[in-house]
Image (cartoon, rainbow, N blue to C red):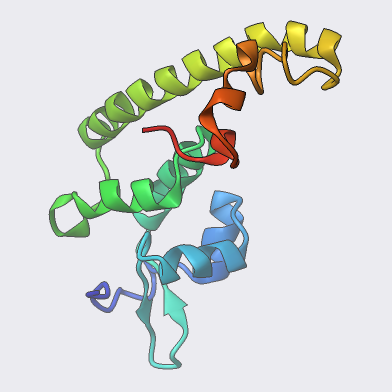
Length: 154
């Protein structure tokens, strides 16, 4: 991965400055860097220095994470930017539109789960035959042994 070019010392931020301005811990910044989400250069003393635009990337990462977007997907979205540039408002609009669809699907699944929860509370996990969440209608008995509910859906 290419590192940022050496930055003028009056414009570059230390890892501590990025942490203070972004509200993200130094260890999290190091982790993001190890995953290719952000980049730094090194000064003559081999200390990390970040371009100021890293603050926008860190903000985008934190917002996406708060929405439940996995870091792998965030990385993929950031890597799609030309030459690893800082995301613009238009970039964010494209990313968020794709993520919005995923969130809508997740919300729909969670809503269905929530709606079935009342029946589950009454069951108290005492009836595998009528449990609306684990074995609705006792259909799993016909599928043979094994953890059918733990297998990925196809």
